[in-house]
Structure formats: C-alpha cells, structure tokens
Length: 209
Image 1 (cartoon, rainbow, N blue to C red):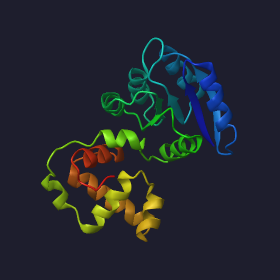
Image 2 (image 1 turned 180 degrees about the horizontal axis):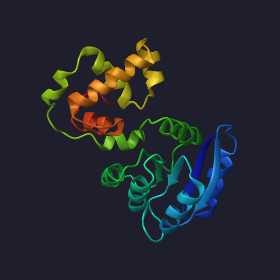
Image 3 (image 1 turned 90 degrees about the horizontal axis):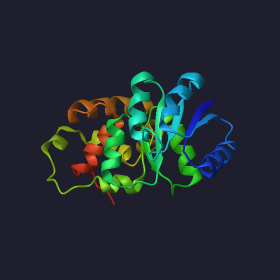
C-alpha cells in the first residue's frame, strides 16, 4: 500500500485527488496539508511513502518544503503537482530533490501512474516539461561513450519508462536494464534517473519529438 500525503491549499483540489486515489486498491491518502509549514509535521506524524506537493503554498513554498522533506526524510518520495510550466520551477524542484514533476492538467491515470513509478524509485517528468529542457547545445562527445544498447536504454528512460517496461521493449531482463542504467550514470557523470533525463534532453543526446 502506497501511503500519500496530499499538499494543496485548495480544498476542492484536495478533495478531487482524494476521490481519484480512493479508487486505487494499492494507494491510500493518509493525510492532507494546506501550507508549507504544516508539511513537515504531517510527514513526521504520518510517515507517508509519497508527498503529492503543490508549489504555490502559504508560508514556505512547495520547493522549499521539498528540500526540507528530502533532507529530513530521504526515503519519502515527493511528486510535484503544479500549474507552473516554467523551466526554472522544474529545475529548482529537481535540485530540491523532487522525484517527479507533473502539471495539474495531467489526467488522473497519469497522476496514479506517476505515484506508482516514484514509489518504485523511478523518475517522472511531465512530457511538456521535458520538452522545455531542450536547448540548442551541440551534441556532446559523452554520447559516444555509450554502447548501442546503452543508447537504446537511454531513449526509453527519457520517455519515462520503468525498468520493467524498458526490459519488455528491448526484450532483455530487468537486471540487464539496471546494469545498463548504472553504466549510463557513470559515463554521463549523473547520479539519478532524473538527472539523466535532464542531461540527455538538454544536450540533445537522444531523439525527442
């Protein structure tokens, strides 16, 4: 059971999220918070697996709170759910330790899938936000360090696929996917799936449409 703390200062949004998640047998909303200052108390009290975090909050904003949560409770996952589409908000959230970044126009299926993915240690970034990371940098030579199979894994990783899904697409085992991803981390000098996605897209290391 994935236990969720919902953080948003709008009652109707919290109620909507609670109603959506109540339909899922493996997800349970254990509490709510309406301000940034309230979040840490709730996390300490309820020990949720995941915090569904808005950015625009009374008191400390969601990015500041994310940093505090990840520092005090590193095993607690944080999924940002916001209306802000600016690249800088995304980058600040990821620097603060957020495990995912979704926009509020995401479908209920997208939100549920994202919760399950980050609970498993995966990274999730809304497709429109991923596109915003694309820059006009020239392709860097680091991509040449990756093998053909590692490049294939990287492409699927940037699409947001889990290890299991990548394994199914490429017809290899989950274990092999994990080995390839660890090698990609080392070769690109990154430490997480989220950093890998950002690096790959910003430097145009993979095709992206």
